[in-house]
Length: 294
Image 1 (cartoon, helix red, strand yellow):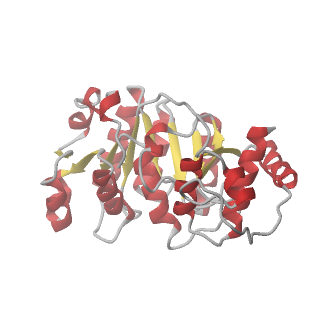
Image 2 (cartoon, rainbow, N blue to C red; image 1 turned 30 degrees about the horizontal axis):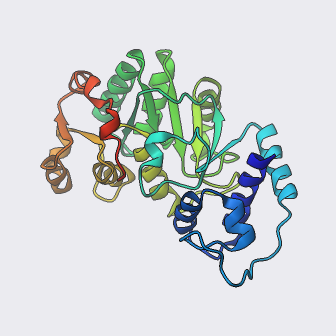
């Protein structure tokens, strides 16, 4: 029951809407209890505030709502849970919770394959070759369920009998784009769909950049197949480098100034094809000492 009430307290705090979620996430982790933060107005230093002006919350009612979500197949994992993804926990954009639908695997090797929603035929071919080869080697292929490169990566991983994870920019009760509804259902059956948003949350201009940050933190590496400057894939490459993760850029991207600049940074590899990724899989697995805050 204590665990259920902790999760309920975290949900209640986030729903208040009076403080930024990253600030609350930091405070809850620091204090070690969402209930203490909620019920005693504990500040970031762990000291009780003089006044608690927040409204009273029926935690049993919130816990019942969480139970209803989980009966619907949406598992809630919070920052206080031991099974919150380790690699994601180490990045500063980590969300306070995730909703999961499907089968989580905690110790899998995860590589994100991302790119434009309007790819060239060559881009689709590269995405399929990379995702298929990774999946055949037991690597979990992570992508964002968007049209184009993401769809090719997910679909190919499933086609070869591999595992894929979709990190989406909406709540789990929604599908975006709508034409990927069947693909999303298949990923639930054979992999995992991850959302950092409330179940009914619609797509928005801010939700997809937030999704890219989580996808980077959730994965050990990001492969960018095709991407323009103003794209989520380019943003994810930047975030992955900030997170200390490996980034692989297709050589065709070197026509872009941003890609040439990223290629000059540590942890970036320019690749000509899938074999350049496969040959470095062993080096993606970090030692304990390499798992540092980013």
